[in-house]
Image 1 (cartoon, helix red, strand yellow):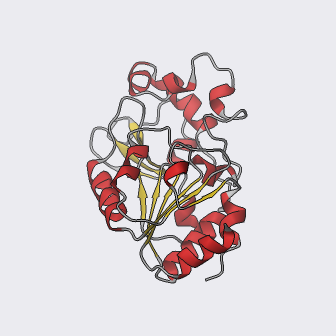
Image 2 (tube, helix red, strand yellow):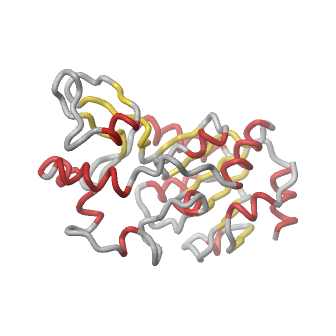
Length: 237
């Protein structure tokens, strides 16, 4: 399988990568659905409730307590997968990284064209005046973070009950539609609408790299059920 993946990558200069939480777990960021993920830890409310727009609106201070404690991992570093994808882009082979992650590790590794379906913890904005703030403003604030105008500063992340950014969606669809090779990595493809973007792929070189099986395994040309970092690290370009 490794040799087949190597050949597919070497023969293409129009690759798109679609990634999920499994890309970041190898850097030490917990995912939501694994045995050790935060969905299986005990809180006053389930995490999916605490990360909903309704909870943000009605229990704002509690939302920020949870968000600071469990959603900000600012000391983690990119892993082998992040660095290999950045290298593929630099070599002119990878056209875009489409990610469901909000940690900014792809950019930290050097990737430039990153489409963040669920936003980023590194972008925050005042809900009143639109003024921008970095992630440390949120992390170092107490209670509800407030802008100098008095408005609440909200993370630019997509909460439950919120829609995805239309511009990011349109760009993602365009890249996937036009891709020669689509590599899907570190995602079980159960989070919609993001996972539905895969249906726009028209090519015939579909690669799936994930530790567990997915609903698309039978349609893929290459399926590797291993760590995405270790797999991509073996690719020579």
